[in-house]
Image 1: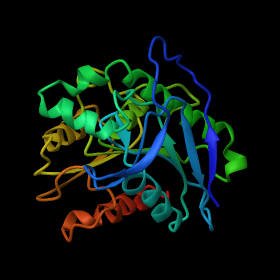
Image 2: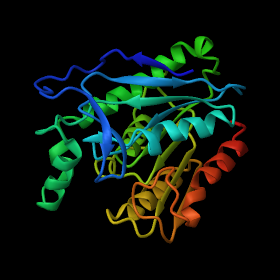
Image 3: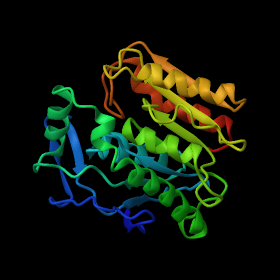
Image 4: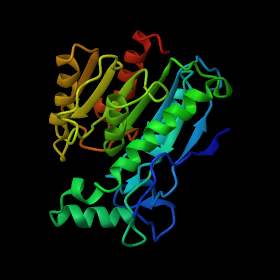
Amino acid sequence: MTTDIQLPVTVPPGDVTWPFGEREYFSDIFGTEVVTNVAKPAMTYFPAEKPNGTGVVICPGGGFHALSINSEGNDVARWLNAKGVTAFVLRYRLVPSRTEDAVKDLVTDMTSGKDLATISGHVTPLAFADGKCALAYARERAKTFGIDANRLGVIGFSAGGAVAISCALEYDATSRPDFAAPIYPPIRGFETKEVPEDACPLFTLAASDDPLGLAADTVALYEKWRNAGKSAEVHLYARGGHGFGMRKQHLPSDTWIERLADWMGQLDLL
């Protein structure tokens, strides 16, 4: 049985306001269920039936305007649950929408040539803080959640991958992830940030035909970790596009999560 958990707000929103309330709906544009207008961070707790002590915070993507809550969140959690991993699907704060359809707002902005990083720049620090808060919250309550406080990591997709990168680069003792898996992430804004001396192992992947060009970002992230002398693994698929998550496309990229499990297994996380 899943449980919703409200998280404390560690970084105040400042002058950011959300005129529309949080909403979950099927997006015809994304072709999947989304959550939009998140103003208060929260996460859904997915306990494993046979827990092995590993926990993971999952950060869905959606351009900081929406969360692809099933294919990059709940479905990932359930798959990992079957492997004994306890999961937490994070709903981090998002860009306030101008209309009731935040995904349509996002597409309108992108097709009109607006810079996504500029549009979302006032909210990304809030989202990054929410990622760290989720890790700290789960670690502080590790016994309650049935996890090992030293086997807690983060997985993120696209914009959620940026949240995961932020968690892996900037943390304190309570929020440090023990492993990180940014999936088709943007690296913009992190290029000059130093990889910490005690940085966790990294897993990353993308499709070479990603229309947002994030295959190059994925390789750059891998090289950033390797150049710092840290453990890293990268997978690039010829086809898959962007934002595939757990959706089946009858392509080799459909099996990406099995490669993640292979990597977690050799780290004794499964």
